[in-house]
Image (cartoon, rainbow, N blue to C red; front, side, top):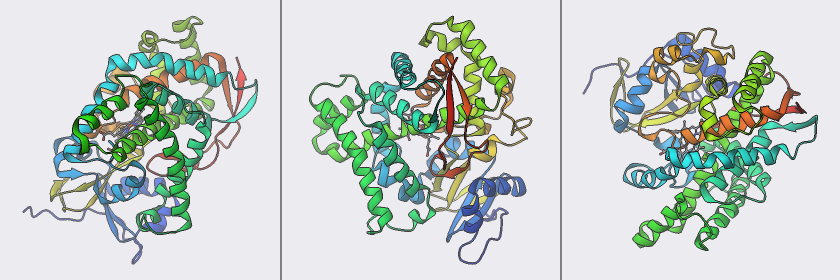
Length: 443
Ligand code: HEM
């Protein structure tokens, strides 16, 4: 047993509710204040739960990589995410997670991802064809639709007729997930919020069931991730029940489009306010693509496009924090994090830390030189997490963001109509609370 102290420095908070009022007012400002005032590891309590907020790349690496066996996703994560993810890949733990990850991996092999590039471009062209010149659109909604179409076609070989219904259902789901109250109100309580939430899940599941039915009827790709799941079900009988197959498809469907849609929305938002960066991006597209649509081979040459995506995910990480729970006492940064403690690893604060980035609040894609990448501590930039539970779709998402962006900016210029500041909600993802309106002009 270590004799290190258990409590790193942190705010006192209020009796009973702790720091909840400050968190609820502006979670991002609160977490930033903590990181700047208390350093690498800080402790606060909120609604009776203690949080160890980690703001330091080396300590984050300890949790995610070196001592990952000492941490699970934890009770808070499961309370919030299980009602959506069930026992799917994002939420499963231990041996069950290992098996599921093994089944999902082939769908995300670099060779397979290369095959998806055409789908990514075609779906973006389809989106372009729906916009009139100078029409004002909510780009968050539009990006949700195009990324949903891409992931369902790529992973499941079909498109969903009513993408808008999924987007609406996602608003309800993420609203509940973002509310700290949801970690207190049990899932079974017949509250209006819970009823609305489960209606939204039912709407999503109507799509999930259609996808599974499509595969059961032999219409899906034989080498798809769902085919692997269904085959495992056949082999093992009770090993993988219908509910688990559903959880898996729902997880891939939701995790596979919402985050990328956010990354694209934030990228459009940043570019709309940085004309020089947009000009440079468009210049690169003209030089590399010479008027043709981008292919997988071009994607490698679109270096500035990649820097734009990297920089947007630095300033606006689509996942702003990662939750874990210690399953034993762990020595971390000179303190003992006790078994059962909740740990949050903070992309938002680390990505905006001036120890790692000059002028961290400035959107500057050209900062992403090889020199910067080599000099950064490994976890000073971790939009996709790291270690064994790193995002399975990271390469898919990066390629998708680049190809969608390239296709959009070949043809269009986006003018910001909404406010030049984003109001964000700290759900499991970083979500705009208001529509992000832009006028879309033909070039
Ligand atoms: C810019 C886009 C994306 C971002 C920022 C992102 C971020 C993340 C992060 C941070 C995690 C780790 C969560 C944790 O440890 O608690 C994660 C896990 C996961 N992501 Fe992504 N993701 C993106 C796109 C995708 C795509 C395109 C897919 C699928 C097509 C996907 C599927 C998943 C799955 C299934 C997991 C759970 C993996 C596991 O635990 O084995 N994500 N993602």
